[in-house]
Length: 549
Image 1 (tube, rainbow, N blue to C red):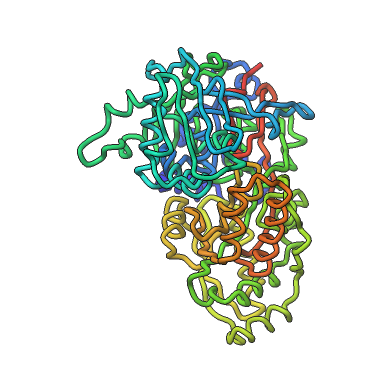
Image 2: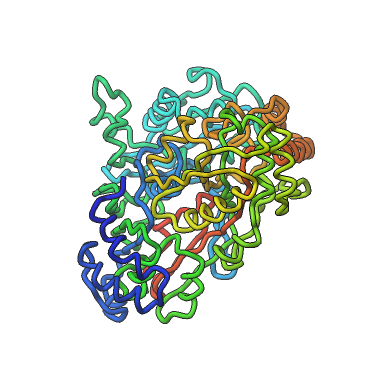
């Protein structure tokens, strides 16, 4: 939930949002004390301690538990707190570190063995790895983490059952010795090793976790929602939703002690406030700024803008199980009403790319050949008439409080949809409320921005289009799509897999479970003395890579 004091602050500075940068700065000078900032000049900010990083973000994570439904803020905390068994080898391109999707490296598992038939993987754990609580990594912590995830039937369980097709915990997971764990699956899987790179599959410190289990909470979910216990580079010492999260370095991290010892992660829902705080040096990093503000900051002294085109897909999801969105003609009609050129120019300042497939554009298997949506009001009206809705209909569209881009797009879409008689009520909701409503299927349309972490077309399709998926929030269901995806998840014939994913994309675009919008890319603004920016598939910043000059 958004803190009341923060909301009041937003009201105070809102008149300056669309004004000049100087007017925003003046508003920010007055606002900083209310946020807990001490005003300082850019010079004094650069001279501050090199081991603390202050980050301004639109929202704090809704939960620290990796079993919580994924959001951008939750993905980022997972990347910094929970360490995985495997990772990708880093590579540097034009000064930015990326992941090399073709090369896997050990993380908590020093080495690993994949069976020739790709039906099992054995992890040989690093010895001497310590959690932030000082407990050593061993097979018991790995097995407890697996057992917890399996029994909570959330993220981990979904990955294991939907991706690896595991049906029995006892048959799949086994401890071979104190530092060796084996996972055995019923079918071959092309993802049997790549899946464990996923930051959703972090390993918990079981010794610490067991201190916080109770009779009615045997997996410590209540405690983990606001605390951390893992082997990553950071642990959380303060969690104040709607206000801030404070991370402290785990100096026992297996890759070495982080250069940044403390992260102060503050929620500033309004983008203009984050811009102003960055410009005056009150914060070191500002996340998710508006495109218009990024264009201004590119010319600002003391500021550096990093831009990458990643794996984002931003869309409006329609609940395909609620009328009138049960009819694909209605869903197609809305896609023909989207003024993409207007949105690209007015909202993104030409920096985004239209989304033309449900598969991330940077991943193997992506095709845009089936995308055929242009702005065609007459076509939309025709489709609505065929669906028995020639006079249109009323519906609701939800978007996140503090997300200016979504708000601007929502206003444009409301006007555009009205041209075919679709009367849209816009609902601005706190992120946690919006997540709750769409996970329960209680809202007909909502903005959804996500990324598929594993660079594989079948994995991506399974996330969002398989009717058995934990996060098929749009309730899209196609027996053919389900079958194609399930086959691709157990096939090691790459040519057949890619052909199947081409057909999946065709069916998805022709049935339009979403209103396809844009890939906005990922941009990060920092002070120029902040170095080490890196891009990862969860689009969350990995503070271990950062340092200050």
